[in-house]
Length: 101
Image 1: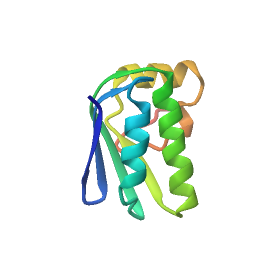
Image 2 (image 1 turned 180 degrees about the vertical axis):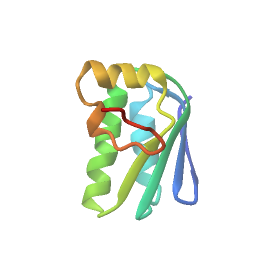
Image 3 (image 1 turned 90 degrees about the vertical axis):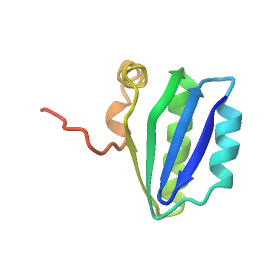
Image 4 (image 1 turned 180 degrees about the horizontal axis):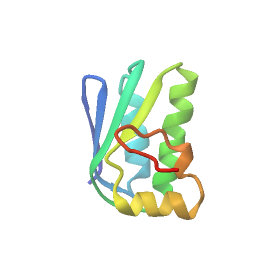
């Protein structure tokens, strides 16, 4: 079961970010307060599929609409692989990651 726990200005996502769980996660995220500076922690995410990317971009749009600053941390390797495959990794704002160019 996927869930989002809010801890101050952080959202802790746990469980699966997959097609079966996307509606739950979207509903939970809409019910939560989006702080001006939000950190989304994906350390406890287990399974992901392409829907996870859609969900992340939905959060980014929501943040932009609310003039909020959003950063994602602890992206699971399988999500990084997917984002890289689709060429969208650089569109996901991450903190704590050093990009080597």
